Structure formats: structure tokens, C-alpha cells
Length: 451
Image (cartoon, rainbow, N blue to C red):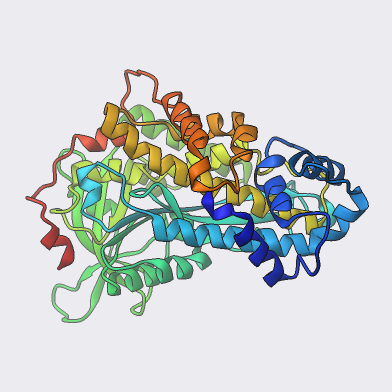
């Protein structure tokens, strides 16, 4: 929270043009209002913002009209505060994960996006997806580091932009020995090859229309197309672990490891039912090939069997659901999608203000995650933690901008939050608990990672 000292915020406010001369409204007050003050507001109005600012800054008397006039430049201010908070979070991030199978990587990134519907009047600036969807919408792309429990990258893009386009940014952010876990929307064999060239790793589901090839038996340098059904016939005890080429052209053809694990019949049939229902609504039917493939979890990766066994790979991929929990907390707990009928200037303030709070919450979660594990050998739930933080937002608001010597009360609040956020006792293990039971297939040493 020391990041939000008045001096630093004032410097940012001057640089972006929010503060041009001494005025009644302090830049820190404006930032506090959007980062925490209106966090619980599901329908943000200028009147709410005005009242919040006056509650935060003793003696402040300001009209809604005056606040409205500050929103455009305020958007630049909050956006820059968000950018700076991301920069600080990235620099301070350290690994807090204890799972052995994940610690062999420098970072483990799960990547996904969430779409927010906007008021129709913003359609010119933010085009919606059409059909029965909102006329105006935006998409938030996220890279979340499982090892540090913090955000590596958060970008706001057009809702109509394909996720595969964002793979270029993911590749740009990736470094040697990182593991990138993505869903089908990001499937791009050319980008996977770029990750491999950077000595980074990828783990992805496979598109149902992906083409597979093997080396031609008699023509050197040539490829032979092979059916996925033929490959699956070679599975043993319901598990296929082999190397194939994936991709439709020679330029993006990728040699990688294909792992297919047969699903229990009940789960496979449920998958088929849902897929059939979706196809029926479109006037289509699924093929025999699709039906057969739906009976397997199919993944491609450039990790080796020595790093992630076929037995554990599905559980490693399952940690991608951590980002689904993040989006659930964003919307269900923090109400990032509850915007009301705001205009474009207010939109920037609200969205970037709430994202700043989410970055802060993630950093607090990471700090307490490892602290509680070391002290009590217990892990804290992200959803519970976010909810408890929201319930105490006013108390936390009072600590923003205080000197380090004055924030003992904040640490007391955060430890109380952590103790209220332990996982409940349950018969079914969490994904992290499941992964915790896997030993590495070889004796892991730091030197292996450095090579």
C-alpha cells in the first residue's frame, strides 16, 4: 500500500495533466475513490463518485459537475496508476508455490480472457459481439503466474478480437523455462514454435479439426497424414503418449508430444450430449470422429515425459481453471462487470480503478498464501480471500497513503482476512492438492532448470 503515497500519486497526476494547479480535489482522493471507494457500487453514477470523494477527503466540498469535468483526465491518471501498480507487482513477485512438479519451471502462466458488456451508447468506441449479445463490449486478456499468484499482464482489447491474435503478446512475454498453459482459443502452432525457439514450454488442448502427420516411411523430408483415430488405436490402457507433427502447412507444422487420456464413459457421454445439443441448435450433427475424440482428454506439449508424465499432465492442465476462479471473483465478488449507464470517460476510471484493486489484492494474497502455509501448513482460498477483502474495503481504504510505520493495522486486517479464507475441509482434493502428490520423474536440481 506504500505505493499509494500522496507524493507518488501527485507526481503521476502532474505528468498526465490531471493536476495543473492547486485545487480542492486531491489526486490521491480521486484514486482512492475509484480503486476502493466505489468498489461495492453496482451502478456507478457521478453523484456516487462525488459523495465518495467528499467522504474520503475531510472538508472537501465539490459538485458533481466539477467531478464530471475531471473524469477525462482522471481516466489518464487511473490508467497510469494501474500501469505503475502492474510494474511494481511484477518486480516484487516471488515464487510462493510449493508443488514440486510446477517448481521445475521459472514461471507457469495460465492465459485466458473475459468479456464485459457495456452500455449500448459506447458501441462506437467498443463494438459488441452482435446477435443476442450486447451492442457494446470489451475483452480483458490476462496472463496469471501460478507460481507467484500474481498477474504478469492485463490488457483491454476489442471484444471482437480473436484470442489467437493475443498469442503474439503471450510469446513476447514468455522467457526461457516458462510454461504457458492455454485453451483452444489460443491454439496456434506457429506461435507454439516461437515459444519453443525461446526455450519456453506450452501445454494446450487440441482443436478437433487439427491435422496430424508422421514422417513418411520411404520419402525422407516428406510427411504422411495420419488420422487421430489411428493414433488412438495405439493407446495403452486408455493412454496415448507419442510424438506427431501438428499443423496444416509445412511452415507451421509442429513436432510435439501428443497425450490423450481416455475419459470415464459417463463424462465422455456428457461431453457428447452437450456438443450434440450445440450442434443441433445450429442445424448440424457431429461426426463419428468428433464423437470418438470427445471420449479423450487430448493435449499437446513440448514438455518431455521426464518433466510431466502422461499420468499427471491432465492435472497440470487443470490448473488453468485457476483463471476461471479469478474471473469468477472479478465478476461475482468484485463486480467488475457492474458498470451501470456510465460514459466513456467514467468507464476508464472505473475499469482501471477496479483492475488496480485486483492487482493489489492478488499481491496481498500471494504474500499471505506462503506466510500461512509456512506457519500453519494450510492454503488459503482465492475466492474466499477476495470476498473477505471486499467486505473490509473501507478499513483498507483508510490505510492507503499511510507511511510504513503507520500500517500495522493493515497487516492485522490482512492476517485476519487470511485466517478467514482457509479452504473448508472437503472429501474431494483440490487440483493443487492432487499435484502435490506427484513426484518428479527424475531427481530435480536447480542445474537442470538452468541448462
